[in-house]
Image (tube, rainbow, N blue to C red; front, side, top):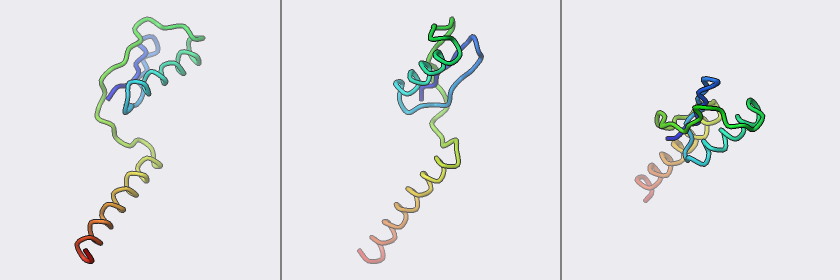
Length: 79
């Protein structure tokens, strides 16, 4: 999973599902921290597999798991 890395700031973003997401993060970082200029050492890097990082992301994952589990149980009990 790609992540944005700014060598100058020593900052690496969270992992994104797509390179486009990591590039957008980089564009926002450049606008905020570098006045839109491209810092030396700016790259997209391979990062750890995507894992939920906020409570809201974890709740969404748990909701999907609960729905899939309920569907499986329904299918095997009433199917």
